[in-house]
Image 1: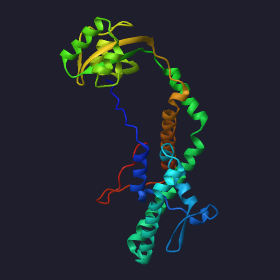
Image 2: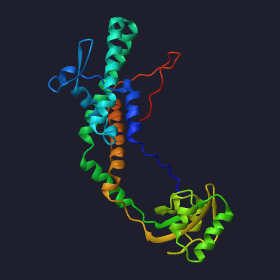
Image 3: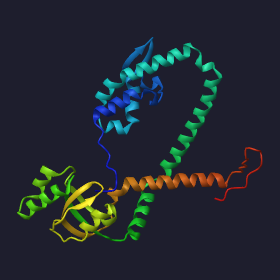
Length: 283
């Protein structure tokens, strides 16, 4: 079994439910921006424009990947209506005049300014060259390892695993038996030794191409029957395969440099709870 945790695929319906239930996470949009795009709703005379929903849809790519805009619109129009109703009620209750509102508004403004500032610098500095440079560094340091491609059949008991092995010895098809017996997916693809739990790797990497395990392999997940389909030396992944990860790494590096530059060009004094000046942090 692979060590990494495999995420479940989120259905389109689930995404819509999350979108509807999480209405407070939607951004507040300027209604005038959608004035020429059609009226979606009128709430006590205030207009919600179709473009407001289009903007929200555009700002949530994880939803765009799952459902078309027409379905998003149908499911979330009431979310916008409810949000507008609550805001109108808040205004009527003069919430905007309360000290707590004004305190949180300052915090929200600072948060937004920080967010937009960092996004601006990240957009400027996380570019194709930075990603390509990191990829070239990855390739230059890549160390090839032995990797194998395998299938497996996972069962709950040693007796069942022995039963499967006996049928394989008689020439029965591995995939057919996997569909009949296995409680896990049959295909494991290519993997290196450190990608699997030790007991599994020890058995798999001691086998030859085309060989299946002649005794059950016990791990924390159950009993495995392994079929080694191919053995090869690993190669660096293509840029397109690792580009999202590389972009994340470059982004983290850029943000770290931003904070470092800001600290290096600022005068910062830190104090303990007792009011004593704290020593400067080493960068």
